[in-house]
Length: 241
Image (tube, rainbow, N blue to C red; front, side, top):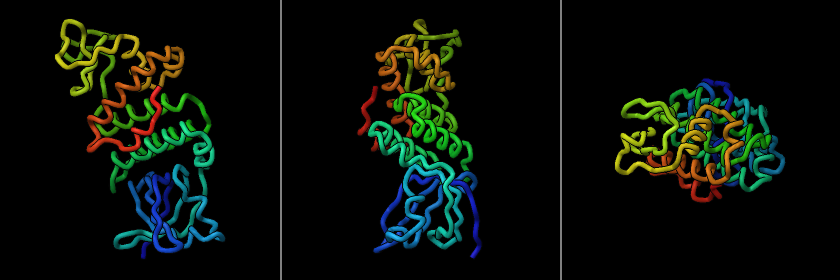
């Protein structure tokens, strides 16, 4: 059978039989891959610790009819250990991986893969607040998937912002003159921070108040749940702040 090698992030795992495990991964060039890792639940297995969720690996597999089979694994980024040491990082990482599962499929998704690796690396290194890493990741992942929000100018008249209101259904801010029924009044500081989250302007994000960050988290959560089919189950376990 043909073999292939790729970079991958382990998104989730399931037990199979007494010693095996089914591993779902997002790869750099092959999209989502589901593969059997044989014998990894045995104590003597060298592969088991490398195929835990949140790990970035170099993996070799051979193709199967329904499931591929993992034959070799090397660690690229051992993010799992650092992430699972902190509950807030762990819950955020679960949301990130569930989002990657929902937004990708069998087709190559290199941009989503690179964004995922960057988010998990940032979480593991504690570069920023976990919730803000998540907010930035969700907005960027949705943008890559084709649902880029507009926080800069009014979606009706194009008046430059920041503006007070955001309309989740259309994914854009509206000015006071074009205020749409049903738009969320969140304030100019919040829409400014939302734009910074999308652009990765961390100085703006980290200098904002906790109240503004909380409001931004609410908008990101609502926008994400609106666009992702059936929503994200893991997001209910977050302490959003």
